[in-house]
Amino acid sequence: MIRFENSVPEYAPDALLAVAVLVGVWLLVTVVRYVWADRGTRVSMRQAVRVRWGWARLARMAGLTVTDKTPSLLAQITAQKDGPTPAPQVLTPRIKVTPDRFGVIVRARTLPQVGVEEYQKSARFLADAWRCTRVSVLPDGPGKVVIRGVRSDPLTTPTTHRPSGLPPVDLTRWELGIDEYAAKVCVSLANVPGVTVAGVPGAGKTSGVNKFVCDFAPSPSVQIVTADGKVSRASEGDYADLVKRMFAFCGDDLDEANALFKRLVELRKRRSATIRDVLGVKNLWHVGPSPQWPLTVLIIDEAYTYFREYKGSDATTKRLAALTAENARLVEDLVKKGRSVGILVILISQKTTGDAIPTFIRDVCPIGLSFAQKTVEAAVAALGDDIRNWPDASPVTLQDPAYVGVAVMAMQGRPGYTRIRTPYVSDADAARVAEATSHLTADPDLCLDALLASTGRTTAPPPSHTK
Image 1 (tube, rainbow, N blue to C red):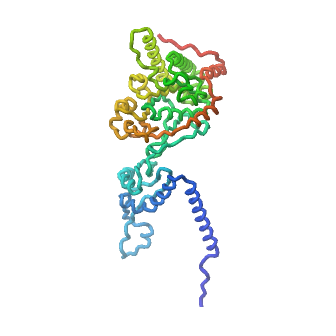
Image 2 (cartoon, one colour):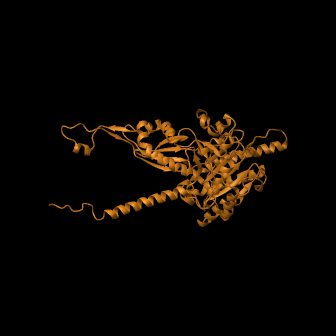
Image 3 (cartoon, rainbow, N blue to C red):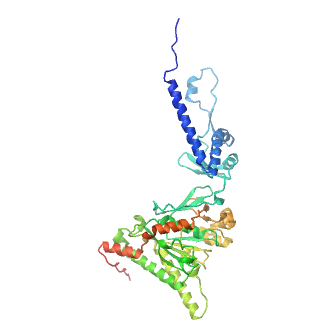
């Protein structure tokens, strides 16, 4: 009589125990993540489970599967010669689902005859099945797509930003906020001469610029100067908490503003005359800003104050008209010639029509943002005539209080216009950052003097003249 030994290996109980431990740890981590998550993320985590479990069936119904009539290798090996033909395979793209507070991010593979276009055509079906407000589909590299489904609208969900107080890793990267799919929106400041920001009062213009100042203030390679046409003194306006981090400030006095603009134009001329000899390049952005040669940011709030046309024959009116005309000429110099030497101008106005910001300044600024507007004409002035072709993205539709802090801009590489939720920075946080970084404030003129002295120069070389 033949006796069979126990076929179960001796290490099987240990292996089962190890598997049980791993599963237990995974469940524990999942539960802890769920408990510590905010309410919106918890809902999204449950949503992510439904997306994974229902994907195979939903993909078939949405036409995102492919029938492969070629038998698999195993089917070919096990098939009998006179037996039936193996059934065709139904290939379903594999997915990876990640939840966040607004919804889910699904990364999927493409298949033959199921590419990006097929996913995009199915977006509205996916939105209904996943109970999302909207779904977007974008390429995510060769053979991959990323599907973003938002359950709640990020544009109507107010967000806050608490500045870290740490220097930005990349001085060319300006993080504006999140778009309507809760994706981060960033723009490059490299080789950008100017930015225009428009919108009705209280729409979020100054708050968005405050975030810019708070994020870049911890860097000694950035120096900021402000002209605020809404006030006479810094203590009266929106920049009262940030003025400690500014090397200069002026209010609505046209003479003071004119002197400030002249000072910056002289800085621009000195930099233009010395940049090649001192930095070894013609364009600052080839080497990047430094504490010795900082990116100098001029913020002009309520720009209309400094550029408006005064009409009248009396002496006072004529003098004011001459000042505003010269202010426009000086700022034009900074915008058109300051890019390569590290001067950036941010112009803020309720409307960016030609009477508020001269077109020879406005149209040179490659980045334009517009918060809520009352008229289509104001939207066109801020974003260009093409905004008429995108009525759903027009800032005219942002007049509801729920959209305070939402801006519209044309993003390079994206069709149409992008709506952006900019976060709110509290006055307390702004004051904290300005106080903590006030010691970094430096006059760019003095920085240039020190840099010239270190290279054996005491003054900039005279500009060359050609006949």
